[in-house]
Image 1 (cartoon, helix red, strand yellow):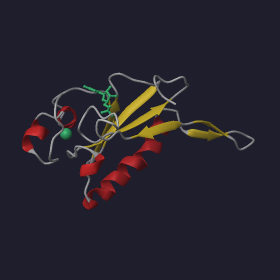
Image 2 (cartoon, rainbow, N blue to C red):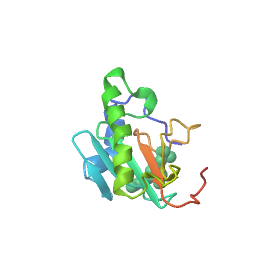
Image 3 (tube, protein in one colour):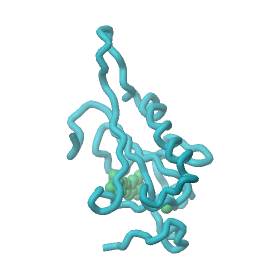
Length: 136
Ligand code: 5GP
Ligand code: ZN
């Protein structure tokens, strides 16, 4: 099994990182949002009708490697979720009686027990009508 990069700035790990290559447009992806710091694209193997990934362009291996100076970046990732959800028609919508309908899930997997497969920090955004594959 491939060992996770020991250090988020390790040049070799960055050179071989799939999501760094997507961020650098060396590997194609279905990109739905981009700014100076972030990229969002469709998951290649969607587990829900809407399944997007939000990544920082900067390589951070796992949430554990995020530094205090990355706090704004992490906030931007989270703050992007409702915009993406709205763009993909899965926002929380309140009915006439005030009860919420629809909605989406945001998820960050960290490390093997956390189910992380790609060692470049990413936030999943799932939405759309259930059931979703393998999820509660
Ligand atoms: P993790 O398990 O690391 O949290 O999630 C990694 C996600 O990346 C998986 O949902 C997987 O389907 C997705 N993925 C893996 N390779 C690619 C790829 O080449 N392109 C895209 N768009 N998604 C990928
Ligand atoms: Zn990377």
